[in-house]
Image (cartoon, rainbow, N blue to C red; front, side, top):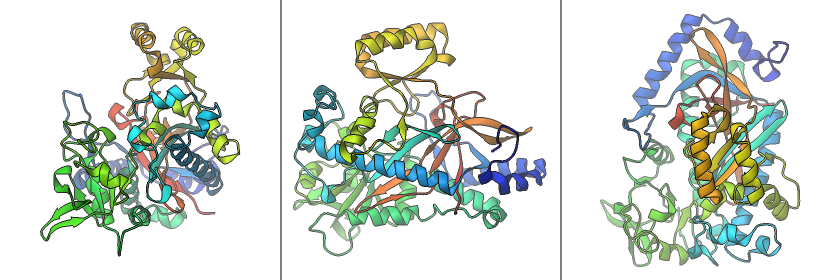
Amino acid sequence: MLTADNRPRPPYQNYHAWHASQDPAHLIQKTRDAETIFRRTGITFAVYGHADSSEKLIPFDIIPRIISASEWRRLAAGIEQRVLALNAFLEDIYHKQEIIKAGRIPRELIERNDAFLPEMIGFRPPGGVYTHIVGTDIVRTGENEFYVLEDNARTPSGVSYMLENRETMMQMFPELFTQNKVRRVEDYPYLLRQSLAAMAPPGCQGKPRVAVLTPGIYNSAYFEHAFLADTMGVELVEGSDLRVIDGRVKMRTTRGYEAIDVLYRRVDDDYLDPMTFRADSTLGVPGIMDVYRAGKITIANAPGTGIADDKAIYSYMPEIIEFYTGRKAMLENVPTWRCSEPTSLAYVLEHLHELVVKEVHGSGGYGMLVGPAATKKERTLFAEKLKARPSNYIAQPTLSLSTVPIFVNKGIAPRHVDLRPYVLVSDKVKIIPGGLTRVALKQGSLVVNSSQGGGTKDTWVLED
């Protein structure tokens, strides 16, 4: 919020003046009010593997993160370039594999990857879109320094928090939205449905029927699945509600079984079709992949897109972007060591105390080591894991992430954040202005995931 000489940065000037005029006791009460709103709305998440796996409230901070119009234009251009390159990459690896033939990516990195689905080879999804919904995690290290931390091209989550954060802020501080020209995020559900419907299969007649496929109420993101189905005005279904009849995926209704054209699935690839993938899955729909390959349904995101989330693939993103767009990446990658390479592994083991090491398929802050914050014993144990399965890990420097203010009882305090903008891809690319700001609520922590004690805050992108 403030420059080095303690002046408010331009995007924060109006907010800073408003905040200075507020009674701290009033703001403390507003924090309690926000928690009440979240509890009443049922905005919760579950943490797998914990002894206490009960539903928890995600912590919310009442000070918005504010981004100027010019900053956002730069970010949006870089995000669009990246998303288009990812889609072109997925199209290529499941068809001609030109990037492999050109020697830009090792063949084994693709073909031995658990997220690469041979079932998708030679198949082109409706409209040629693989990644219908993308979440790109971005960190900031300086005034004009942004890095992409990772891509979420399979089933990016958290958009419901973005929407509820905005609604809560507008409910509690309506005056702020008259004093600041903040770009809208509230129309995301409408834009999502519009984008999904635009990718209906070619044979679809009339208005496409869209549904959200959830694993069910015990999934940690079930609130979001129900929220999105409700706000889009579409059906929320489980695998048991669907079956393949006459070559179509149909949904059980009070009027009998009716066909679905577009399925926004929040079920992982392995569980999507027990006849194609895991035979023991009860979460998917037997035979859905046959219907998909016959061009009778759109699945968003397409099966096999998870390979774009792989952190070893991430390390090649500068090459991928240049290969498919002919231009250098507008948004930089975080420098990355691939532990599968002997020289990189040796460097990582020697510098474990200063690096962040992540599993290539990891997410949610699990399976990672933050070297500077780890004990000597933790680093020693992790080094053994690294040596046993080096190809399962990548390493990155510990970045000096930017901080934003959060509200605490003593006033405001700095905490590290990242940003996850959401992108909708159909016949055009639509980037929602802002996204989800995740904040590490523990002082000094760099881990922003809600499962690891992080919280969220509203993200404002200002109009020009």
